[in-house]
Image (tube, rainbow, N blue to C red; front, side):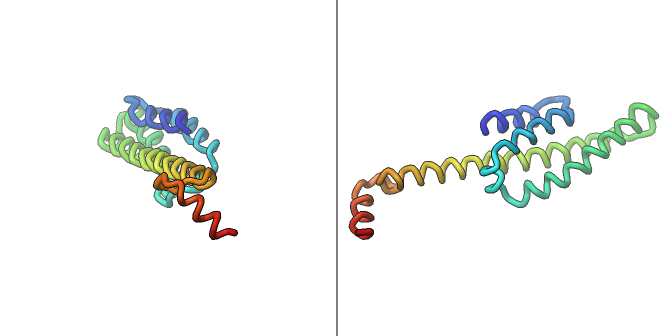
Length: 131
């Protein structure tokens, strides 16, 4: 989980981004299905919307550099939209990972007999109630 999060953060801060970097990072996210289950709807919308700036970026690259008729502002805003969508996915993945780790720590504490606040009398009170 940490490798994919750091990889996506590295992709966000690269001066020249490629679609290969983002595709590797998104493929690494797929290796954590329990974290994906905790991700929100914003990342799902961003995942479907990232296709638009990626496609337009290729088209404007061709228009601007090959034919010389494109506008650099369009290229800038497509890169900006691509970065925003990728940042939403990355931050939502990191947030879901932290929620998952917190839930794992709480369940480990409850299974070991400690209350979430660290009080050991919690285990004794649950044993009395269950008996």
